[in-house]
Length: 132
Image 1 (cartoon, one colour):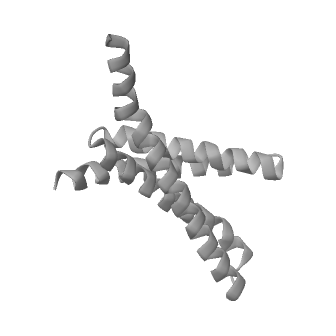
Image 2 (spheres, rainbow, N blue to C red):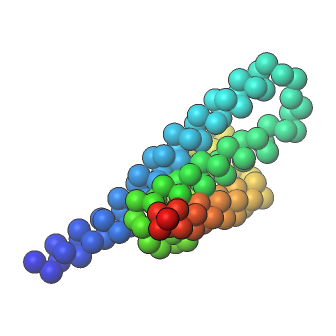
């Protein structure tokens, strides 16, 4: 009986909020990337601006992922947001490796730091919004 309580507690406190948060973050990130693709297609955007736009979309997705995860859990916002940012970064890294057969270490580190920070900020905001 005790093991089942721990399992349901782990699911309720960690797994469920992270899965919901990452799903919301992915949907937001994909939606923002589609919107930015339309903008880049219709307006003459310099090639050097595409990577920062993609990073901004990923950062907003991580922020929303952390916000959602913390709102679902109601606690541990900083940690849940960081976990959501890490999972999103891993998914983006996996997509980059699958598509381009390699990812630059510098770009991957910048994305990791950005997504961890954005997810953590979203987590803190999510816990604080839930209390009001």
